[in-house]
Amino acid sequence: MASSSTGSAAVVAQARRDSRQDQITLLRGSAIIALGYGVGAALQSTYVYANLVPEWESVSLGSRLAANGTAVVVLITVLAAVQAHRAHRWWLKILAVLGAAAAAGIARYLAQLVFGVYDEPTASTRDAEVLSGFLLGMISAGIGMWALATRQTARIRTRAATREAVHVELAVKALEQEEIRVRRAVAEGLHGTLQSKLILVDARLGEVLGHADGMDPADAQSLTWVRAELDEAREIDVRQMSRLLYPDRLELGLVPALRALLGRLPASIATRLSVSDAVRSFDDPTCSRLTVSERLLAVRVVEEAVSNALKHGPATSIAVSLDVAQDVLHVSVRNDGELYVPAAAGLPSGTARLDTRLSLVGGRLSLTPGPEKGAHLEAWLPLGAGLA
Image (tube, rainbow, N blue to C red):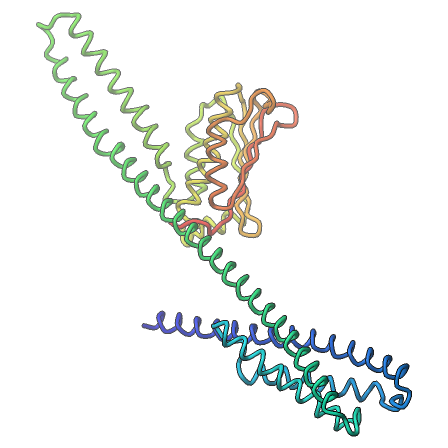
């Protein structure tokens, strides 16, 4: 109930902010246009009358500006009073504009009388001034309404795009969660159920071979070969597949998982893992701020770099470094194998798939040649983009 009340309050507060911004847009746009028209009209009429009607030279520019300014104030006041920015139907908007413009036109004419622009105006003069004030107000308020409609349309589109982005992000997170769940389940199945059955089969074959005195030597040799192949499949293939699906020690943290990964490399390859204090803080086992999906993706980057180093060149050393800056995890892997030449080698398919995967969570990947030999694989992973 508390979260529901908080959500409703946030919606109401946002609606109030939107309404306030709409009102400011309408009134500000209308006022700017109206003032522009008013100043221009005052300057033009003063110049024309001063040159064509000499007896009107006594009417100051200030009086005309004051009359037109009064019309602008009345226009904005009426628009604010009738809450024109809240009108949703087109005919209500038109009525608000026409009403405000009519009030502005009448106010302009009355202000002209008050400020001494006219002493005894004729009916035609009165009608002309009221009509010109009305047109000034209608054009100004109409442009203000157009600015308001443009703002509202832009806001709707922006929020729709934001909602769509949030839906996509939630979908990606859901897929990540499901992928991790499936990976973990399959890895546990391979490591547990399948491996246990293979152990039982191996034990059974051992019993059969233990009583193979009367067995044909060729059959005994075949059984021995089958037992060796099953043992190799259990020790290498099944465990390897399990680790590929869900790396060892991933639940303990990113650093333990990478140490386990590098520890399985041949002894002929020197490995170095450099971890910044920022990463250790994020990957603290007692309160890790790295989600399982983030750890898995970072391990995949190192796995891809190690795989490339083993496949494309006799690397003798692999250096892995981890750092965090502005909530972005930076993974760097260097090897001293055969020099990577992008023009000739292109981008490995596994690296391309990994780049696509990183881009889904706002990250990126870079594969460049080493300074003299080998290759340098870097990845930038925004933290907080996935869920455990």
